[in-house]
Amino acid sequence: MNIIRLIIFTLLVPGFVVVYVPYSIYNQTQMMDIGIFRYFGLPIIPIGFLLYLWSAINFLLQGKGTPAIWLTKRLEFLIGTEPVKLVSKGLYRYSRNPMYLGVVGMVYGISIYFESISTLIYALGISIFFHLVIVYIEEPHLKRKYGQEFESYLQETNRWLGRKSNSN
Image (cartoon, rainbow, N blue to C red; front, side, top):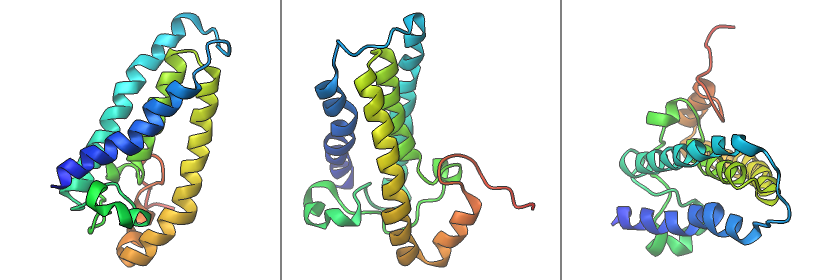
């Protein structure tokens, strides 16, 4: 049943952020002319999607939940619940937030490929928004929920990319 909830979550949340909003704000009069470099955006879109998908599957298999956060408790019947186990393997060994990286990557790829200034500004905005949500809402929640296990994870893995070096 969680796989169905994951699909619904993906259509509703990342689908809204990556497809609906960029399509809604796309404005052909606010274009950046980057010529052939626009094609650099094309591979970023599927790479971002694969990051998201792999991360979401890790939540499902390793965490026994969906990407839904505790704030969505009333929508549990539709989009599932947050993982019951800390997800720290797979892509989560190299980034504490690969799902966010995937979603933001897709939006950046779209803005580059379509040469859209409005979509690029939106991508910058959601990058800042996601960072603030992670720092001020998600991480404090995960510290309370998982305690020392999450604290250890914080010491091993960077928020965005890379493993931390143990040597000082």
